[in-house]
Length: 523
Ligand SMILES: *[C@@H]1O[C@H](CO)[C@@H](O)[C@H](O)[C@H]1NC(C)=O
Ligand SMILES: *[C@@H]1O[C@H](CO)[C@@H](O)[C@H](O)[C@H]1NC(C)=O
Ligand SMILES: *[C@@H]1O[C@H](CO)[C@@H](O)[C@H](O)[C@H]1NC(C)=O
Ligand SMILES: *[C@@H]1O[C@H](CO)[C@@H](O)[C@H](O)[C@H]1NC(C)=O
Ligand SMILES: *[C@@H]1O[C@H](CO)[C@@H](O)[C@H](O)[C@H]1NC(C)=O
Ligand SMILES: [Zn+2]
Image 1: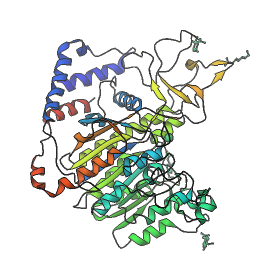
Image 2: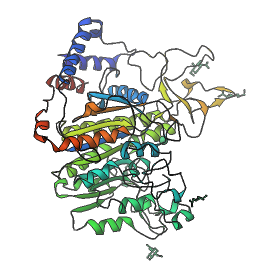
Image 3: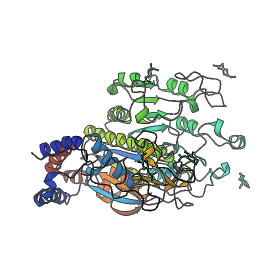
Image 4: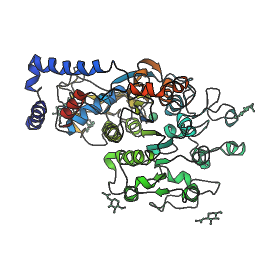
C-alpha cells in the first residue's frame, strides 16, 4: 500500500509543474507509523552482532562529504521520479554511523594520501604521503626507510584472506596506493614522474610497489595502464598514448607471466571482464584506461565497466577463498567532479558508488561481512537557498538575490573554477544551461581547482562489530575496528576463547527493515 502510494506520488510529481509535498505527509499517522517502524528496527539492534567478520569491505567515496551524501540521495530519488529528500541511499540503510575527524598530521584540511594512510594503515600521516608515518616528509626520499606502516589489506593477506582493490581512478592513485605502497610522494605513479635523485636514492615508484610489495593481491581493477608500460610502448586502446616508465619494465606482462599458471587473468575492457567466470579465477587485473576511468556520465558503456560491474566481479572472485576477503572499493571521481566545480558529475559518481554498495550487499551477508562506507575528506560544496520540496537538486533557489537581483542555483561552491564575473558582476545563471553535465556552479573565490573541505565525514557501518564505529572518532580508528572484527592485525585477544559462543549471538536480520527497503526501492 505504502509503496504503491509512494510510487503514485512519484509519478504525479513528474507531471506537476510546481512540486509540492505528498498528500499523505499532511497526516500525522504517516510520520508516526514511519517513526515507529524505525524505532522497532532500532530496538532489535540492542542484540549486538558480535560475530567474527569473515569478510571486510570498505567503500571510500573520495571527497564524499555529508553535503555530497545528502545531495546524492536527492539526485537518486529524482532519477527515480521521486521528490528525492525522502528516499534512502544504500548507505543510509546501514544501522551505525560515526563521524571521522579527517585532519592530516600537518594539515587542518586533509588530502587523500594522508587520509588513506589513516583509514587503511591505522596511523595518521602527513598530506601527500602514502603508507608512511608522520616522521616521513613529503618528497624527501631519504625519510621513507624505517617509517613504513602496513595496511589492513596486508594484515588480511597475511591472515590467509583474499584481498582486492577496485577504483574508478588510476590503481596507483592516492587512495588505493596506501593499501600496498610506502611512498613519500603520492604523485610518484611511475619512475617517469619521480625526480631522478629519488630514483637514484633507491625510492620506488607506486606502480612498481603494486607489483612487488604484496605480489599476490587477488583483484586489482581501475585505470592506470600507462604507469605500467615502458615509454616506447603504445597503449592498446589509444595508440598515441605511451607508457611512462623509464626503467623499461612492462609491469602488465610481468603480472601476466607471474599469474598465468595460477588462474590469473588480465583484462582491459568491459567485454573481457564480463566474459570471465569468477569461480575459476583467483587473480584478476583489470586496467580499463591509461589514466583514470571516465566519469560515469561520460562512460562508453560498451568499453568501460561501471563501478558496480567491477565490484560485482571482484566480490565473486574474492568469495572463492573460504578464509574470506578484504576489499577496498573507491568511488574516486566524486572528488574530481568537485575539484572541477562540476557538481553533476560528482553527484552521479556518488550515486553510482551507492549502487555498488547495494550490489555488494546482495552478494554478502551482514552475519559475516563488515561493510564500512566513508569518505576521506569533504569539499567546499553545499546546497541551500530555501529551495522547495522536490526542487531539482541542480535547480535554482526560489528567489533572486536581494543584493544583485539575480537568480542563483541551490548548489554553490566556496571556491573553484565556477567563479565568473561578466562586465564586473555575477553571471545571471538564468542565461546559461545550469542543468548540463559539465556546468560549473558559482563559487565565492576564483580557483582553477576547487579545494577540499575540512569538516568531519560520516562513517556508515553494517555487520560484525559495526557498533564499535560510533561517536566522533579519529579517522585512523577505522581499520583498527575492521581488523578487530575480523580477528586480524594487532588485537586478537577476543578471538582465541570461545569463537563458537561469539558466533552464536548472531542476530536475525530485521524483517521490518526489509519491508522499508522494498518500499523505497519502488520509489
Ligand atoms: C635527506 O635529503 C634531503 C634532501 O632531499 C637533505 O636535505 C637531508 O640532509 C637528507 N637527510 C639525511 C639524513 O640524509
Ligand atoms: C623499447 O625499448 C627497449 C629498450 O630500449 C627495447 O628492448 C624494446 O624492444 C623497445 N620496445 C618497443 C615496442 O619499441
Ligand atoms: C565506444 O567505443 C567503441 C569502441 O572503441 C566505439 O566503436 C563506439 O563508437 C564508442 N561508443 C560511444 C558512444 O562513444
Ligand atoms: C536574468 O536572465 C533572465 C533570463 O534571460 C531574465 O529574465 C532576467 O531579467 C535576468 N535578470 C537580471 C537581473 O538581469
Ligand atoms: C557587457 O557590456 C558590454 C558593453 O556595455 C555589452 O555590450 C555586453 O552585452 C555586456 N555583456 C553582458 C553579458 O551583459
Ligand atoms: Zn581531492
